[in-house]
Image (cartoon, rainbow, N blue to C red; front, side, top):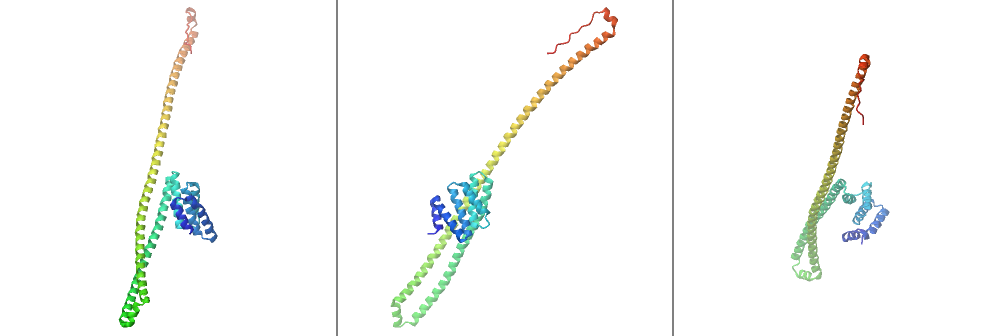
Length: 296
């Protein structure tokens, strides 16, 4: 049994850890043969296996190795971008996830289109082969009729009764039935492929919508946080402005009080000065005293 069949069975049955050793052996075998394309595809499949067993860091590293590699195939790139969009979605990096998902879709569509063309080519080839076979069969039947016309004697009866003639007819009939069966099988496969393609398209649209919704949700959460931060800053600035207004008012009151006191001192000083300038009046009149207000 080939490595590919074993991998598919392990992947479909969910035995991901059982398939890891087989994939690693296949990578070593491809490297030994120098088959870089097969090696790239197997590494991308290994990344998918690591993702399924929740070893996301290893899966991401292997996928990045495939994407940055000089030698890669369409299939390996498709698998690598699939791993990257799944890992980024788990890390809630929806922008990168959506970008990788779009690349995965484009590559997957290219591969699916190639498969459809191959199936169509097989059906067309089978149709052409059937046309040739029908023509050959008609020629054989014509020859048979000519033979029957020629051998209307006893020789013809002997030939018809012989085992060789019966075997000849049996082989022609079996070949015809075999071609009909293969044609019907190809048509059935084409129908199944189309149904699978429609299902994949619906699944892709669902994933894209979910990624866009998550992106919008993150942007709304960010806007809400920014709005709350701005409200908090505005509140703090308002408190500071009110405090400055209150402090300025207090300073104005103190300045007014000091100004009044200075005026009183100035008036007292002027009276004393006038008293010194009038000696006679000072002798006849008692000295003038004024009590300054005490400063607290």
